[in-house]
Image (cartoon, rainbow over all chains, first blue to last red; front, side):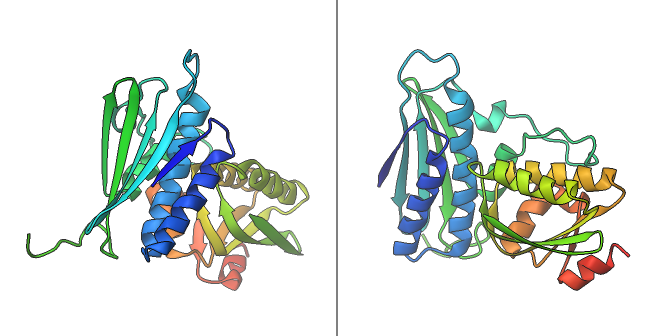
Length: 147
Length: 111
């Protein structure tokens, strides 16, 4: 399934709702739904807020969902500025007190923590980030014994 | 997102429901600030009906923690669903605020 996303701040919530509907239709766990909701809100908000600063081309953002036998994959593509969240995002200092904590910088950190596998590539002017989550209820510790 | 607030003395209890994400984190911030600026130095947030909170919501929570600290009080959470507790752990927020099982325990922590 493909969702076309407009560069509008109201869009992450709509996408999150569509992904939830897809997951419920396919009887996926609440745990998986929660992880994708959180990550998609973070990643799409980043792209819409910062990805197209100074861009000359019209923004194109898509979200593709692919359900396999053992996992579910969601790929976010955008033609904004090259940004690899796995390398370009700052790592927040979680040991700081409330008064010293910077406001922000947690979104990518949460996504990395909540999604089992993340893969980034820049393809023909598009950032492509694929989020993969195993269908096993408990997440990463599930692995099939055969094949 | 909705917050239903009740007061006893200088402690406010806010029952948060729905989701706090990038689209409504500003409203969440505004509601929490309103409660604290209205004179509640201690704030308990009952998260039993909170579906999720993203980093934008955590920012609002951080501001509320700072404000209650500055006022000489504090912010405590209770009834936190497992997934949201994981968000608080991963983001380091369990060090910034206390998490309790019940409203009563959270209220008692301020005495």
